[in-house]
Structures are given as structure tokens and as C-alpha cells.
Length: 222
Length: 79
Image (cartoon, rainbow over all chains, first blue to last red; front, side, top):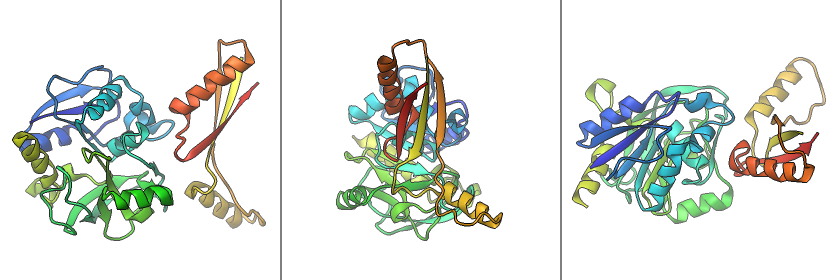
């Protein structure tokens, strides 16, 4: 399984994300935002957390219009997998690969702490290794994680079983306490919590590891 | 030719920053502020000299980058 991890100016979780993929058994290529193409044979693209382009204009907006993101949108259009974490989730909503938008936290504070998530669907390569309703301990670190979606979109996401994770209790004002959503074809996942920071014993939790292991397993068998 | 873009959260989208400003104003003794909405003003200096062409060009910029039309609306003013 071949993963590509993108680095934008201001990304700060790119190395951690690459390490999490590597430890799960993936081959990882690091990709710069000015590159216009992904490496040959990439199965999954990881868009890391951080503050791409200083969060100028809107979080993720400038990154979403960078040369590499055109290649990422094309990759997703071909049925390729994409995992966007934190700022990566913001980038994915800005590219419209995922619906909704991430606004300033309802309490206006930057929130950096472990939270409890519930696995809301196991029907994806990302979440297939968990059991439905399983509680996970994974940290969040964001200022703009307040998932905003109108009633119609919320209903659609629920009907189509596309909510991947919810917060066990309100964290940032997100509609429906949504922490992560899937694309229509279930191959693009955006989530605010950081599974790459809950992937090794030294992290204090390994609950995030299964996302990477599950992807590697699903894409290696394929 | 210069253009000015106003980007605001759409009606119905909760604006936590505007709410915080409203609370701060009340704390300072400014009574009677029923609501505050916070947005952005973006000024552009354009090579285009035709006002209608400039307006169309800036609208495309808004749709592509300057506004997130999922949650924001924009107005373009040619000045």
C-alpha cells in the first residue's frame, strides 16, 4: 500500500502522519504542495494537520487551491482514498470533496486535549476495524472544528451513514457532534481529531492506530 | 480599477465571533445592541478597466477562493 503525505507551508503533523502510515506497513512518499502530480501508484493521500498558509483567508482555503490539491481532487475522482486530519479536513471541505464547513469553535477557544469519540459507522476502509459505537480516546487540537451543516445535509449524512465519528459529548459546537465525515463513495474521510497522535504506546492511547492499519489492510488485499 | 468585496456569513449561520463582540459591547455599557455580525472586506486593485468585466472577474474570484459559499455570501463593489 502506497500512501502520499502532503506538506503545505504551515503543516505541522505531516511527519507524524507519515510515521503512522509507515508503522501500519505502508510505503510513504512525501509530497510538496507545489507538485502538480501525485507519485505513481498512490493508493491513499494523507492531508495533515497544521496551519497551512497561516490559516489566512479561511482555514484550508489557500491550500485547497494549491497545485497538488488539483491532483488530489483528480485522485478522489478516480476513486482514490483520501484521509484529511484537522487542517486536512478543513482543506477537504474547501475543495468540496467533503460537504459542510468548519467554523470557529463555538466557545471561541483553541481546544487541545484528548476527547472521547464514538465510532458512528464501520462501513468504510477507515473504520472497518472498529466495532459500531466503540469509544475511542483521541486528542483534538483545533480552533476551527465546529462542523457546520444545514438540516438537509445532516439528514442526508445520517441517511447515507456517512458520519464516521461523533464526539461523545459536545466539544466545539459541531452540528450533531460530528467529528468526522465520509464522502459519498466512502473513500474520503475528514476528521478533526488526530489519530496519528494516538497511534503508539508512548502517546497514551493507541485508539487511532486502527484507522491506518485498516486502510493498509483493505488496500493491500485489494 | 479597484473592487471591494464584502464577505459575510449567510443569514442563519451562527456567528460566534459576532456574538462575542456583542457581549463585549454590552460589558462596556453600550446598551441596545441587538446583534453583531462580523465579516471581511477585501480590496482588489485590478488591471481591468471595464467595470462590468471587472465585476464578473471578481465574482469568479469569490466563487473560487475569496468566499466559501457553503457558509458565506459576498457582494462586489466596483470603486
